[in-house]
Image 1 (cartoon, helix red, strand yellow):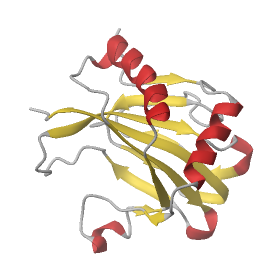
Image 2 (cartoon, rainbow, N blue to C red; image 1 turned 45 degrees about the vertical axis):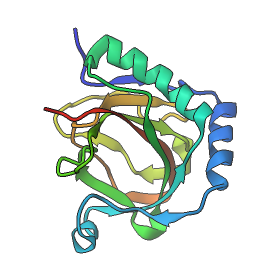
Image 3 (cartoon, rainbow, N blue to C red; image 1 turned 90 degrees about the vertical axis):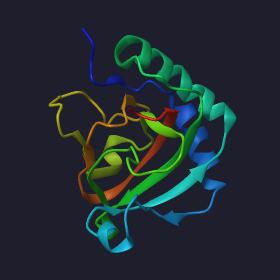
Image 4 (cartoon, rainbow, N blue to C red; image 1 turned 180 degrees about the vertical axis):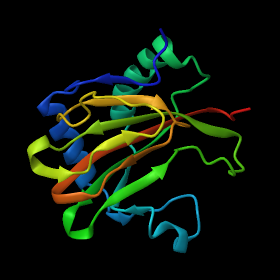
Length: 180
């Protein structure tokens, strides 16, 4: 049976998570944005990001994308990705409301096809901040450190507000020809 997402609980080791965090710290922190005017964003997304460019990290995530795509999605996707580490803190009331990862009004020749989220924080580091799909009800463990979640970029999802502590996640979007 085809699934709408694939998850590997604690798929990455603590050492791999530490390496990702070290790579992220070498990049500048920015306020997160969305594909919409700034005044629209205020209620939708509140967090910071660090954009990454790392071939080894992209290769690591690509192996999960290939497995998930073969098992479930079967979309035309390439090893071309954007990567960012997202940080949600309680002090900011950080969250990301319902959204999908495809820029439907974009003018490029490619679209985001497959999204990846890797949990970088330990579940005891924060409260709130749960990841949730809109169309898919699940009790899968998305919170364990090192968990890798892969899903089609058109699935709507959100991150609930953080109520205490800090949640960090690596997110990536792999591209393919435009959705038709």
